[in-house]
Length: 295
Image (cartoon, rainbow, N blue to C red; front, side, top):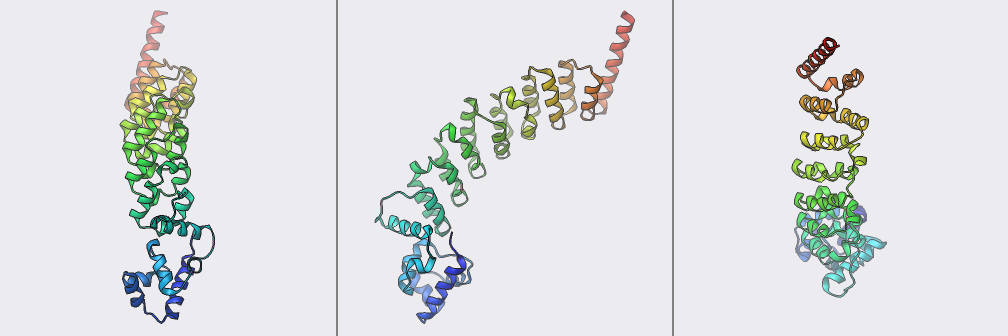
């Protein structure tokens, strides 16, 4: 990236050598004198569209203004690309290196002009996300391959919910969804979307249900627990998600699982609620009395 302090010093020193005021330079560039003042104070960098004129007016070379390194090559390449003098596509890294210097519309046009290339490097593209509008990012990931979905997860805060859900549902339907991904995606989704994404989860993933339970409806959590055939695993998972379920749901699960072990009931008791726990104990006592009378 660019050394803002160095750029500001170069602009100020070159302007003074040319015996120009900030207003003189601003008039030559077609910007406000406040813009020039901000450049010289290191508060901001000039837009990339101004660099050619800035260098010409101040008798500077681009490398003198910005310093050396690959970023200078990217700026030169972009300037030539913008003038139609270079048709070689820019890489994600090159676009990223000049993103701070581009107006939003220029950056959007540049990315749209390289969509085919960018879709193959989504992991790098996520670094451009803070500079791009939602519509452009949605287009960027629209046809992403399932094997590249992990990179999309990093873009979740910047995508529209519709685009994110559409891609995630494809991954889920293919049986490739992982709890670790869902945990990062679901804060940006509504609960009905989150519920659909877990329909195809395998038992191996459901055992980590507690990681995403806050983003699911209670009935969906119960449904997932019921998919666990191993009763011990189901109970252990139920204990972990108990803080996210109301007592009536837990009581229903305990009843369906025919849990009678007092140690297990004690583990879940704090989440049942006093009334449900009272009924549960009374029901257990009545059953015990009936069994004794039958004996």
